[in-house]
Image (cartoon, rainbow, N blue to C red; front, top):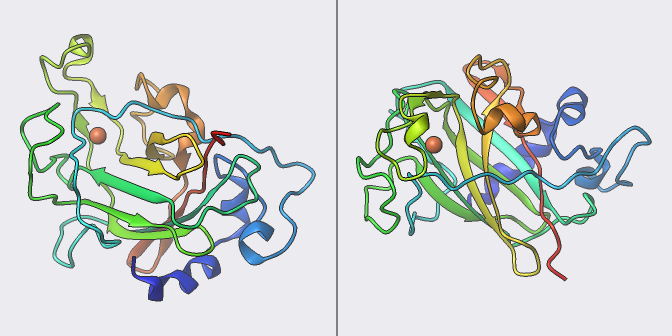
Length: 223
Ligand SMILES: [Fe+2]
């Protein structure tokens, strides 16, 4: 990953943002101090389905969207922690994939996980020595659930809230698959996935022409 971007990340973390994260952790864990405040709760990040648009083999990169990609520019940062919400996990592999601004993925073959696409708006990276990640992308567009997906037929046509997919793997922890949402999206409430997992929705803050979001991830220990 582009480690030159990492130092900017912690500086962007606001107290308000900390208090609204899913696995709520006090900034001390990131900034070198003690981990928890008295009113904070440590929770594992909630899992979700992989969905039909995952593809194996995305390139290593932290910039998912090129400079000419249409859409609102988004800088997303966070830290991957162990189940105590305070031990950062360096070297965790994060895969991300998302739709473009118009709600389209780089494939029209849902469910074909080994298809070699252009890997547009897809990437993977390792967390740095402090368990941190940063990606530069665009806010994804919404899209309807495609028809004729085995097991999801009853949801065909349902408009999904904007989301970014994650898979997170670390050798001593249980792999996590999840989707990240954005607070205020009116399609969250009736979504069969996001509607029950409010902890996976974050606030985005405007920073000039950028939007910034912070999402920390807590994995379950496998030992
Ligand atoms: Fe999706």
